[in-house]
Length: 323
Image 1 (cartoon, helix red, strand yellow):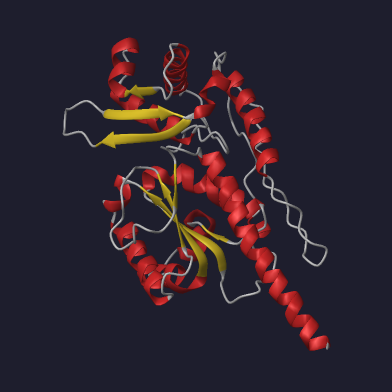
Image 2: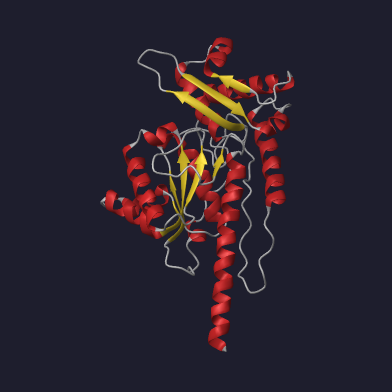
């Protein structure tokens, strides 16, 4: 799915008008249900297929577009047997009302940019103390493209932004992100937001050249067991079906046991399931309650709060040395 509308950093190529049209059809049907009084509008693949005659391939792409958009609170998907139609359901986020007058991709992008700007302002954490180094604000995507010639809604993050500072601890990364392939767009959104806020993020695509030729099983064990302060897990049915995510989960739970339950795992539940080995008492964020944009703001706030605590420790240590 190299040409899916990620709605944060988007790369749509010529000839994909059908996919974007399908996205607009889906958005329109969700808005119709909202206008009809549905508190949490839901849309199924069957409804979209029956009303607009959308192909199975396009339905699969539209699901990814919706999952990566700001109007999706959650989704479910059933892997079809050969020759069977796709089965999925998407639940609209509470902000669906803000898109009630949207008719085009350009209008969607404009409304979404306004929504994100307001979200970031309302969720901005308090300013750091004078003793603490200033931290860049959470990024707001700059969207200005329209269908069909959408090329990019934002510039890729500078990887240096997430690697420029020395840590007050021994971790190589502030956060590592573990996810299954179908959730790559969501993972990249979180990685980009944390990186642009000045944090060191392990997201595999950032290190493609470095990972080339490595024994990934050994390398990922180091990343998820030792080298990261936090691990974000995008919990989904897909996560349970992948070999690499099974390994990453094992490494992450090993770390959890070693640290005797200390804060480490930050679960983002794409689907309402539990992962084996993770205590049910550990808090999580559900995409049925928060959009991926809101989740990215929460992630940056979490990382900033930890960094502020580390800065306070550093200041106290320096004062003790001076005395």
